Image (tube, rainbow, N blue to C red; front, top):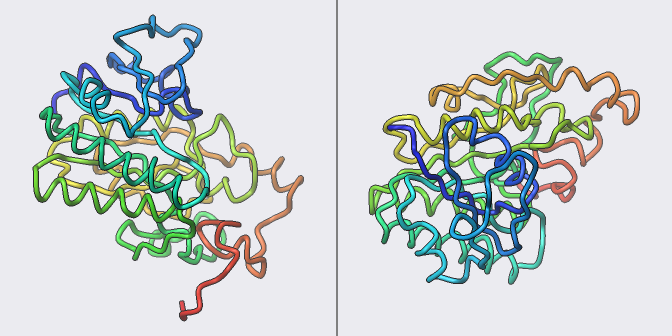
Length: 282
């Protein structure tokens, strides 16, 4: 796919959106910004005043049509990023994501990069073994989805929605199951799931430009020594992660201790969101 020139960035005022606003322009993108909150300028960022920034809710279908009109692709980070009530999750993450896809279809946008989450598979038992794990033990992207929260359930819906829009309308999506994208990991679990902001920009760039993705699901993390999941499909897009959380391991382990397989908070991919274990065998 030719490198998109203009990308709609939803959730531009959020934590991940703000990080990407500072990094993606270096790849040659012009960003159009969308968020329910006003988008405040960040240091070194081009002017984000109208018409490059739209303040609106994902429920506003007219605003979404305006936002996607003329863009080459969408990086969809908007929505509720933590567990909440079903009504709020339904409005923002399920109905809102549908509204975005329908607007993109109507305006002829051909590519969306969708921020999915590790919580779509949060009840997956984490792999056991000393790092680095044998590649055969890493969690593949085709592992059955086992959401650990209503939030994770909404991300499972988003992945199915992306598949439907590819099969039905030819609208391509890369669904990125993001682990934790912060300047640095803040707990021991994140050592396995962390994606540095720089690697996040690398992965989103690869997802925006790779050819013939159809609907592709990838895991979003850096090249961590303690990695739990398989990055094969992400690397197939052209993603080459450069960072490793191991530089933070000694400090975090000294503060919090190693992961304990007998601790329910540590037993599943979703961490403490999965403290009520499923009743079926695994």
